[in-house]
Image 1 (cartoon, rainbow, N blue to C red):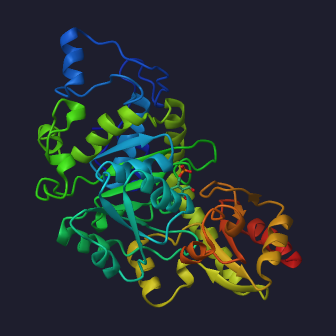
Image 2: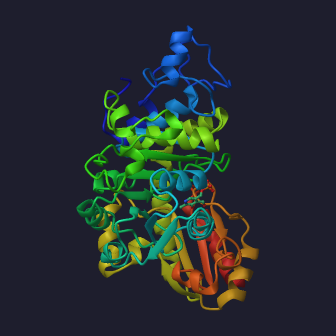
Image 3: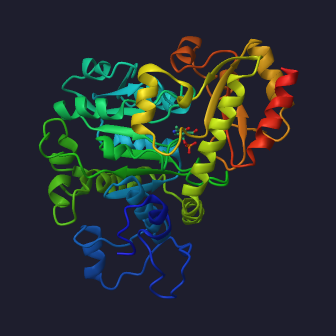
Length: 430
Ligand code: PLP
């Protein structure tokens, strides 16, 4: 066991890997291989039968990816993780693993536009119904639940509204009915650990803060190991009855010697095996590099985010600043309950001049990059209504919190004076 530490700063450097067993390399090597030599036919048969866990083929597992998975699982306080090719693949797999044609799940309206499309449209074509509800009232989740509801889904710090999700409240409602909560924690690594608040599963687009440098697309799902799938066997036949795609394995039984990993093991050996959205070893390596400095970067993202929000709140051309620290009432209480060590690096605001002012502002930015990403070490800006959320109907845009004049900033780790100076000169033109 490389570390027993419970401190995230140490976990991201030491969990899951000490040195390469063959070469003693300290940096996790990039195992750029498709396949792995079996010791014997018996060894090969045992691996395929899951009697022994080990490397078979890189579409399903890889040692570089495994080191990354163990680190993120430890960081999130879960039991095991599954790295995937993108955050989108992680969102899809997280739900599809337990939600089949004819089933439904309940999802917060405050989610990333791409997730909205995936859940509301593409999954609909698979016969899976996504029921969107406003998380402002957690009871909306209970009201939308029936016998065919397989999970709840929310985003910790959803942009653009940036209203922190009521994780504990919704998790408790779900647990009372045997429905697990899946949390997209992409925007809040380090500052929130949803599994500690009762979520059963957390996922990330590792493309964002975990990678941190805007170089690689990836995603990860973490199994909290804290949900009793067997107790709710009627709701989860896919985990409690023989799986014809894996010679009749009953996942809750098959994993008994391995620990409470039925959910994540099934996702790996059925969905990943069949759909093939594997994380490349090189990207896993890039994410391991990102993880090593995640604690430091998040601290700076949070400090700079707060400084920018304070600056914008006093600016005469700004109508409204959207940042958890600046919220009041229940939204502020939730931010304080679920975010520790800062309010994140995402800041939204509305210009008094509306859509045209928003465009002028973005075109005038000099240091900020104008890109469709968040969580980069560099500062980024975008106008969601005409880009990330443009495939949503105007009503859907409003439901997710996107108005015409809304500008989203992902505040980087540059010196705060330089970030504010760039905003100031662009606001002068807005
Ligand atoms: N979840 C959130 C909160 C996101 O912001 C994104 C991407 O912007 C995704 C999921 C999808 O991740 P990816 O772009 O890595 O597929």
